[in-house]
Every structure is written in C-alpha cells, then in structure tokens.
Image (cartoon, rainbow, N blue to C red):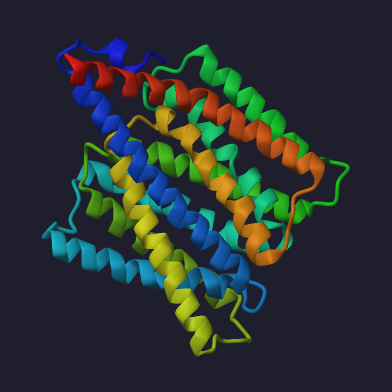
Length: 312
C-alpha cells in the first residue's frame, strides 16, 4: 500500500497525514481501554460466571451509548439500507464477548490475547475484497509472519487449552468482521448510531445467554465497582474505535492492534504473575514485529513530510 505522501497531491498530503496520525492516536487509546477491559475481565471470571461478567459489561455500555446519543443530539433511527449491517456488526461484537469471556478462564492473558490477534491478519486479507482497499505484498508478508508467531503460541504439542483456544479463535474471527463492518459503515451512519446499535444488540444477546446459564454467585459491592469500571473501559474503547475507523483505512490500522498484545503481556505479568513461555514469547515477538514492519515506515514518512513542510 502506498504511503499517504505519495498517493495524494502535495496540497492534500499534509492534511491526510495529520488525519492519519490523529486516527492512529485515537486507535491506540481504544486499544488501551480494551486491554484494561481484558485484565479486569480476567480477574472477574475467576470469581463469577463468564455470562454474568459479559452481561455486566454490556449493561454499562448500553447506558453509556444512550447517554452519548442524547448528548450529541443524534437520532436513533439509522438509514434503512444500513440497519441490517448495523445489527450484523452488533451481533459479531456480541459473539466476541460471548466467546472471549469464557476463553480467558482457560488461557493466560498474554497467550489468549495473542490468539485473538488472528483478527488483524484476517482484516488485512479481506480488506481488498470487502472494502476495496489496496493491500501490497508487504502487508501479506506481515500476515504470514504474524501467523507463524500465532502457531508458535498455540503450539499443538503444548499445554494451552484447546477449548479456550477454539473459543478465542472464534472471537478473533468475529472481531475481524466487526472491524471490516465498522469501516464499511463509517460514511453511511453516525458514530453514535453505530455505537448504540452494537451495544443494544450485544445486550440482548448477553441476556439470552445469561437466561440459559443463570449465575449461582452474584457480585459484592467491590466487584460491582470493578464491573462498572470494566464496562466503562469497553464503552469508551468501542466509541474510540469507531472514531478511528472514520479517519484511517482498516488495513492501515490493523498492524496497530499489536499494541494491545504488548499491554496484555504487561498486565499478565503485573496482575496475574503469568509469564509467557519461551516459545510463546518468541511467537509474540514475531506478531509484534510483523505489525511494526508495516506501521513504523508510514509513521516515519508522515513525520518527515510534516517536518519538511515546517522548514519551507
């Protein structure tokens, strides 16, 4: 994929680069929120059922989405031709939560998050077909390197739970579709409409699951606060994700997802004393290297162009 400076006329390139940098910054903030959500969820699912934790998260997010919609003065009624895609996006996000929560009961946070990062690889592969975005051989090479890293982590002969791995892989596939559908909808609906459709769909899906798997243990006051904080991290992260995709192509943002993987390794060590094995760590390094190989050149080119413009 060509850099912004080469693909646009000189007069529009700096503006496009600024938009790219702002979008990437927003996306990194979203990933930080998601990593905190994962760490809080990892702590909670050891004491409460995964459906309860998931339902608590989306109850907070639904309230937050209605508050944002009202504050922005946006109508809840989206264009008719976009409603099906909005519900589909919400359903995919619901699958992410339903599968991710029980998966982290079986998997260490770092390794589980690494498997989840099949998602950006799928985004890069499908972006030309679903979104019509240009993807070059460097992106595909990075996908192969990242996939090799994932295989090192899963390690068929290793000790990772296959149940947890299968649930996490399903969650990753669903999240890839969320990112692609987000990009597809960005110019058709308001960010707040996308937010509330997703939150409401996920809440109803979570309600159906918890009705079948009714919890035996309910949270205490301290854990209710932790669930509230988890939900706020998820809601803010989702809204920031939508804003980022309005500014930057999905195939460009995909490599930045690996920042969340680095955070997962850090949270796993700090909060859960879970240090990846040597083989898993090698796989994580490969995945991060694959992402940085695509991200850093574009960032450096953008910064150089901005610097040259200031000196003229």
